Image (cartoon, rainbow, N blue to C red):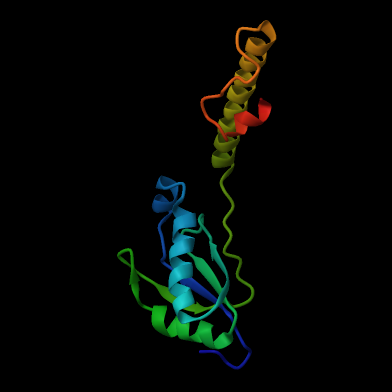
Length: 153
């Protein structure tokens, strides 16, 4: 356990699979919320980080007090979560659990974002032309109020 250095960051491994993260766009946010609820039962937390591209399913929890971190390890280590056995230990202070996306995935993501932007520009152009020609009243109601495109109106 804690060797007296006051370690407060706990690393949980096996919390998710890459397939789960890729299948659910809100998976990391949902998992973070679930872990925050459980961790706060142990002690006050400062931060929960889900390393969503890490193949080991890593989550880091930073507690306010070292005693809470130690208790978390005692409770969570070897516990089952989502059908997987969790391993839990203090962060070693050096390991970087961030995994960058592959060049192919980054290219696909940027291509998708570019296509999305093109659609927004086209929608904006159509709305401007409708207003300019007088075919619609000035207070033209866009079908998705509050969306990003409403900033163009």
